[in-house]
Image 1 (cartoon, helix red, strand yellow):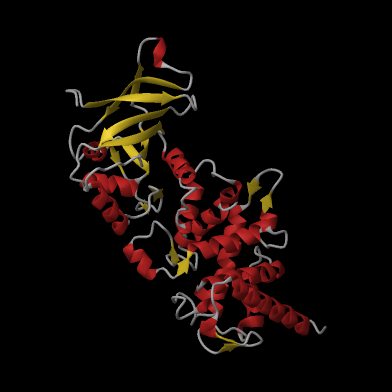
Image 2: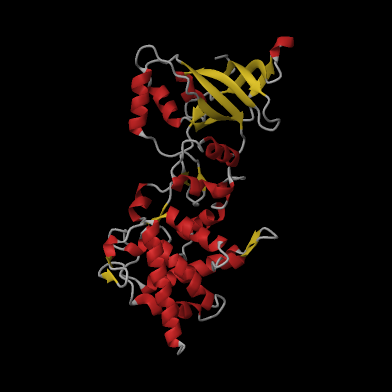
Length: 380
């Protein structure tokens, strides 16, 4: 460390991108805590998403720490850091400084002068390893580091998702991060960005019947106690309706112009699911062990029913609530969310599982019951 609180390290600068410099260098185990922090996923008081890392896995950290404190350590598994744009790289002199792929030189990283000051870098990959390294007795163990300059949180999140495509992240963590990144790492993930943003809305909008009931990766301990619906089930349900031409949400997307009428989608979702809550009050806001309506099988099946029900409802009508309730009433007496046995399916209410087979069977049963009820009421 120099007197100016600049950490200097020999480094290689790789010529991958002119917009995002990439450096390879080493830090001592004890220096990682000085330079880099973990951006834990959570939400601020305004409900905005902050961070992107999952919680600490204590058993994993313990296993790494036991190895680090053993004899003859070989630790090639490095860390990936998002560096601030205040880092400076000075190339070495002479013709041998570059081989066309990398340039050797010195990297200067500013570090905080006081322990409470924020650290300059964020750990994008290797947070469990970094925790173990910070607790290791082997303080001067050289640790390989790959660092890229990423001044924005959105860019860090994007790289975090890309880096973790080989070792899959928890699905709910990925879906919650997607609306916050500039570009999704793959077409598959890109398709989930809008549904995940809508799930955010449903969880945070005070007019939503799902407000505070959805489990998200950023939920704190108190929020998790209240939440009963998994966000992944809702994301998949909304994705189906948005992408299928038969989905009631599909017409609200202008594929040619690349625009989406999110306000109308918001209104439709709140109207429909509020009507579901009022139609089945005894089954709403209970954990799936007490109500299959709130489990994945219920959410997916009722979302598919939404595609049929809401095609018969004018969401701009003054009587939209009553009209939606009337449509749901056609199948209400056939539902067994908290007790009894489902007709035709031959399954007790608590044997319905969140599996493709049961989701399909329940969806088809509700669709048939609804279509038959409408046909009977029209005299056909």
